[in-house]
Length: 112
Length: 107
Image (cartoon, rainbow over all chains, first blue to last red; front, side, top):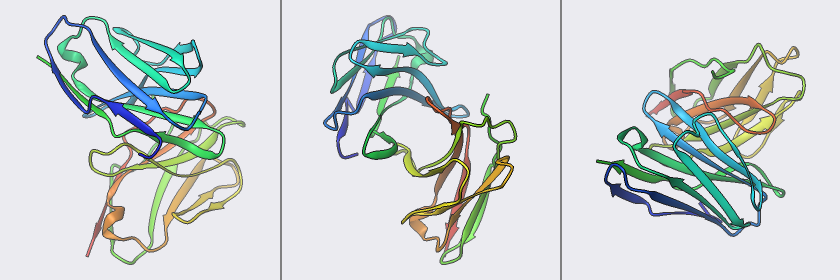
């Protein structure tokens, strides 16, 4: 969506390797979120950020870490990828001037 | 667990109004009702939100009951492009998505 991009769009990685997904925004929004979406589970919140270097855990944070060193970038790292982390990952932003969350196009991650 | 209950699927004829119900009997006083939709594999899209009063925007109308225990999203003239999963969410800060309602709009 306009103002938010996720990279990469697709990635295949091996079990046990670290993986970093990037969310970049040009809206200068304060809040950023990482969700994962799996069949039968809907979207589940992994981590979120309410400012530079301010982050907190969501409902499925085990095995994931995040960093936000700049307003525009929110990184999600899988420290040691497992097959259970195969999923579609969505980033979202929220801030003044726009109601609700704006979601990115998603990253499809496959761990083999 | 999601705080809302939605039917898993609904059908609507093109050009007719689509009325999507949502129950949220445990909603707290400061929690908003949000509606999003997700078309195929795209990221969810914000539609509308409200606290107590009914709301309308260019996409839809939101009707919230007086006791705030349920709401209805109304798409006044559904088109084929409105076929999507519709999520009703209650919350104040972070949002928890349930499984939503799959709305199929047919010609």
